[in-house]
Length: 267
Image (cartoon, rainbow, N blue to C red; front, side, top):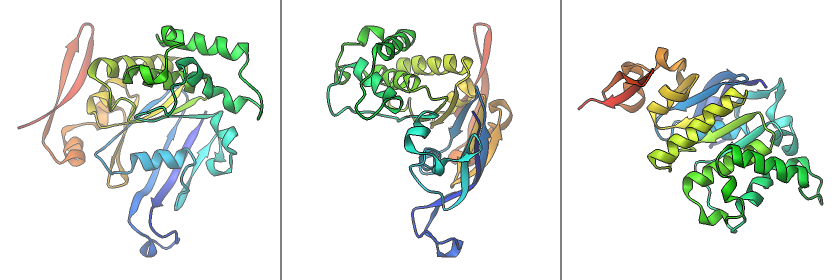
């Protein structure tokens, strides 16, 4: 799987090609690429365009300028069913309208593989249960999706994306509303998926997620990319201050046999 974002700009204002005739630009000349097995963490304050960028990648929004290429083909030229076989979207929060069972909610991920009147078959159910067991939520199969915790619901959405057979996961603040323990458990599952070759784009407000889990970090401010590279190389005190307008210290902590960097505000 190859994702390329080339010179992408977006505005919620006018759609003219002439910059001076447009409303406020949310994205400004954004370019990056992603390949198999990468966890790319998009880091930045509120309102810098992370969610808008993801909506452009998912085909929900049409760029003002530039393009999104998926396996060399413009994302806007894919039919929705075709695109769902490549991309899976996991939002930061999910409040089900109906109390479907967790298993039925996961099985919704196979709809792109079925005909209009076709129902999931035995093989789909077995695959869904296998993935749920792998993620540690198999025991919740018959539980109503309204009766589980936020962390369990995020794992349910992760299972639905895996059943979808997509190779690229777009995760918009997926751990933002989780407590410390559930956030850790969800991110550990993300690392396991990376080992299997999945590509993941993850937006977050938490610099420590970028340090600990990202193979690459893309730092964004005012709709533009100000740094792109390995976390240890690009997330320094200067960049963090530029992002959040506060002084920070970046330190190394030792946990068992591993070392991690953490970001702490300086008072």
